[in-house]
Length: 101
Image (cartoon, rainbow, N blue to C red; front, side, top):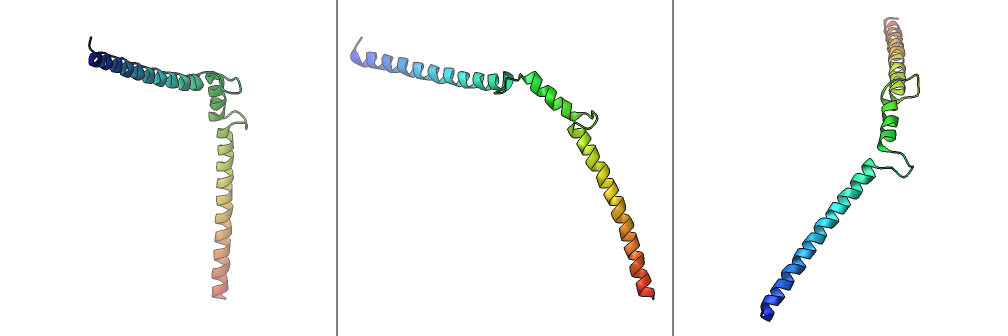
C-alpha cells in the first residue's frame, strides 16, 4: 500500500471514529434528559409522585387544591360584582333625584 492510500485510509478511519463518537455523545445526552425527566428528581421523588401532587391540585378536595382556590375567587368575584351593581344603581338614583330637585 502506498503512503497516499495509507493516509486516505487513516483519514477515513478517523472521520468514522469522530462521527461515531458524536453520535454516541448525542445518544448519551438524550438518555440523560430522559433519565432526568422520568427518573428521580433532586428531592428523591419519582415522576409518579410528582404527578400525584399535580393531580391533587386539579380537583376540588375541600379547600386545599388549586381548583378550590379558583372557585373561592370566582364566588368572591360574583359577590363583588353584585355589590358594585347595587352601589351603581343607588348612585344613579341619587344623581337622578338631585337633577330633578
